[in-house]
Image (cartoon, rainbow, N blue to C red; front, side, top):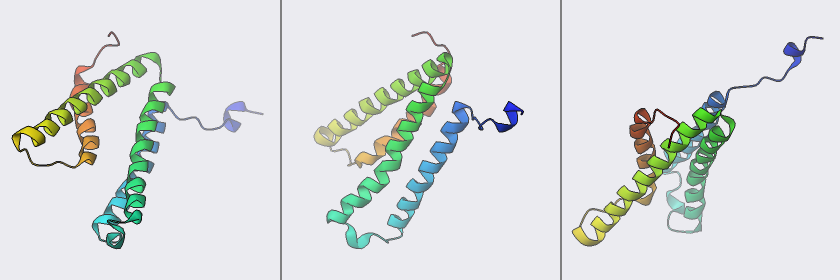
Length: 137
């Protein structure tokens, strides 16, 4: 019997990451679109609002998990590159959010919702990624 024919399909870590991310983000977009459309308006401000908040946050946490799995499942070079980008993006996001928070407190900057740190993180990731070229620290 041919082992290659009967072997389970094995995807690369990158492909698995993309499939997981697409799946999690489809759920994220679906819940967000339904909320924007007003389907959950009657729940806002009550305990049901927390259910919606968690429902939107779960795919975000799952997507971070998918990134961590990409790091764990990849070869050493990819693992180091992704990790460096992840750490630089997280640090950049925390610094920017801290500056903005103090700007709100001390300089009258307009309020930004806390959930915006997530797209800020991925924007920072996209900006630092082209400059991370080596596995050396």
